[in-house]
Image (tube, rainbow, N blue to C red; front, side, top):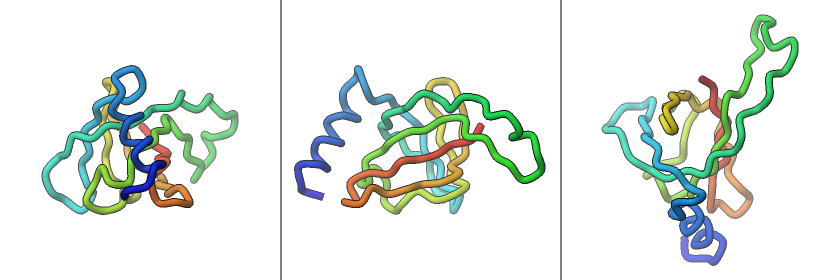
Length: 105
C-alpha cells in the first residue's frame, strides 16, 4: 500500500495517543503477532441480546490492512487493554487500506 490514506492509517495507529498495542492470534494457527489497533468505545448493551443466536459486540477496532500477512478472519483472537476478544466480523474499507473489526468477549 503506497497511497496517502494507507500511510495516514499507519501513522494514526503508531501514534501513542491514538493506537494501542494488541496481540493477534490467527484461528488458523501460527505464532502470535504484535500489531497496533485504534480502539473505539465498546457498544452499549442492547436489550434482548440474551435470546438464542443473538450476539453482542464487546469492542470495535480499526487496524491497517498491512498489519497482518493475510486478512483477519472470523474466530481470530485479539488481546489489548487487558481484554481478550474473538473477531466476530472483519470489514475492509473500500480502498483496502484498513479493516474495521467487530469483537466479542
